Length: 364
Picture 1 (cartoon, rainbow, N blue to C red):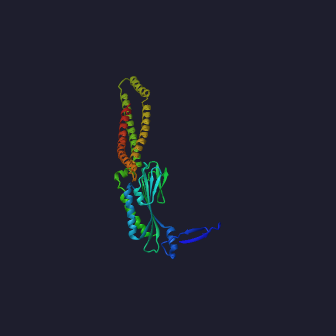
Picture 2: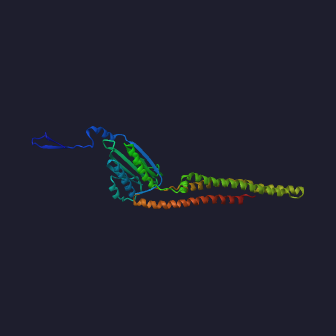
């Protein structure tokens, strides 16, 4: 520290003013200064990875991954944790940034909000064994849940940024590592990836199949219903024609005098024409097909929506998030019940519709 004495030029009282200046000690020799600054400010290599699937994460899980990374890094090299932050994002697009693990563990959200995202960020100065000076390394680990309703979150530079109206259904984990030592970066990526995979739940294969192919299942259900209606129309048309031909046969074999036979056939034709059997039948067929198409679209949409019942991810950092988890788990069970009901309804509608149409419109 250097002291500098400066006399006040504006008076003769000898008033003196004392100024203090400070210096910064860097952990490197003067000859290594340029390399040290390059390690801090230079462009590092980057490893990025995205994990899909449903998971649950709470305060204990965040503390566990922090200590896991800390232990591995200090075991391998001479390292100093410069900063560790936890950023929590809520459903109303607000967020809270906590600057160390202790603050995070003591923090309790008083607002009735659901936590939908959390981002962990480590910043280290590490002196690798093959280097003369410490270099800056960064780790960003971000979690995103899909329980935010119309609110959504995208990842920017490893942190969650609030956005509305986009990617509302995204759920997963994002890992980004900035490093200057490739083997170190790969080792940390493997370590964190293994921990994240342990949090992700193994999905039910049947449920996963239905959820993944929900659009195709809904389209197939609607298509089958409409195809069954077309088959029913063909069967009904065939029955109608047979009924018509049967009556024509009955008239043609009338054993009467010539004039009486001709009059009976004319009466039959007049009866058919006056009753409008064919126009009514054609109108019934068209109406039935239109109604079947509408029902096919409605039921197909219902089946597809019910099948798209993907598991949710939960970031359980507030009491409201805990309540939301209970609600959504119950809703998911009800949705699977509705899916089964929608399939049965589609089958029953096709069968009953064809029976009614054939019974009442298949004969003259």
